[in-house]
Length: 140
Image 1 (cartoon, rainbow, N blue to C red):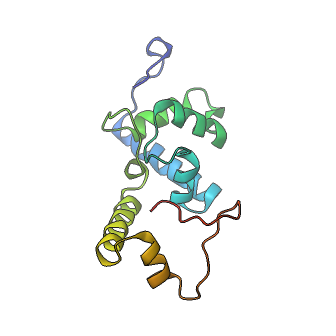
Image 2: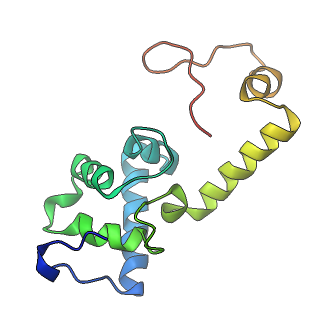
């Protein structure tokens, strides 16, 4: 954990961590209308985890650092296992679990995301489009 500031940022308590995590989740919902969309905006490289520097950049983009040290306290609250990374599970365990179950089900039932899309989800035979106009399935 990047304490920084010569111990200026003490660890958050368990009660504070719960409040900070809930507040960050609500921030993502307000801004992106979905925790998953918010996560994708933070996880720019798409590897499913955020390092401290990626997280600080994301917090800056979200305006979290208006209060001095807010992003450091938030990091401490989210990285409660001290793995040095934040995962979607750290923000919303329920959604991460459901997405994991969906991914496993797609793999078992359909084999690939392409087969699932065209065989199950895309009944009108539409192509998935990204904001740039290209075909894009995204990350489950």
